[in-house]
Amino acid sequence: MAMPRPTAAQLAYGACTVIFSTLAMLLLSQTSSGVWIAVIAVAALALGLLVAMTVPLPRRRAAAVEQPAPREPVRASRAARAQEPVRERAA
Image (cartoon, rainbow, N blue to C red; front, side, top):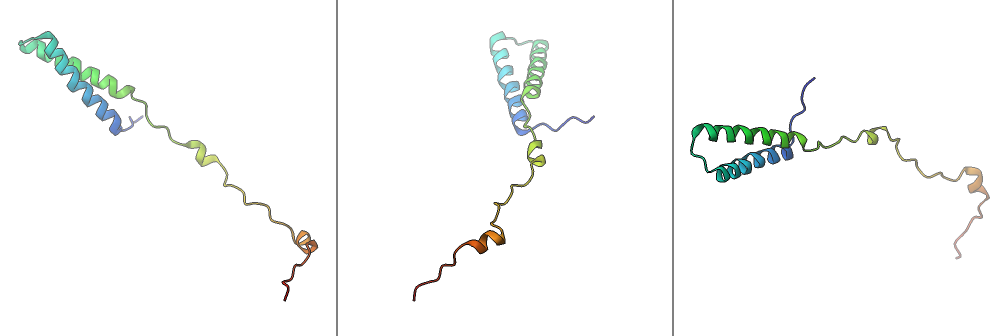
């Protein structure tokens, strides 16, 4: 089973989450150690992936395919038209 391609919204939300969460964690932790910076980067990537995958996907309109075409209005039969009075223009 193939995974569907991510939408533009999913990519945008995931990327923004990675960027902002990385900046926030680095500023709050005030670390200068390379190990902790790597841990923060991995945590931010995991959080961005989680956010990107939980964005709802657009639904396809399956109901539109199954609906029949709209009916044309019922026209008067020949017999009904024959009973109508004929209107002539006055000269």
